[in-house]
Length: 89
Image 1 (cartoon, rainbow, N blue to C red):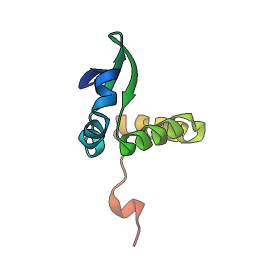
Image 2: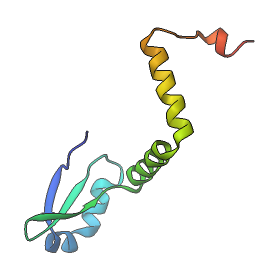
Image 3: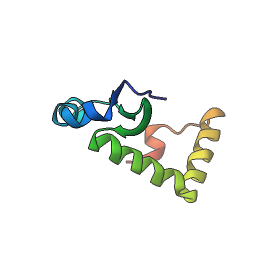
């Protein structure tokens, strides 16, 4: 699990917002914004945010999760298919 890389007060976040956005735009970083020393919000890139939404969508789809759990059980038992079995030419 990824952790927060930086904690900054809300007053500093307001002052440095553009620089913070530039910092996280192409990174996996997450910055916590604090109020009175308590984390209140997290700033992440749009790419990371969209990835989180996609993950939540997958996790909330019972049919997909059932298939994934079955695949994991089969993989744990060594039940693998080679390329030719999957993509018969």
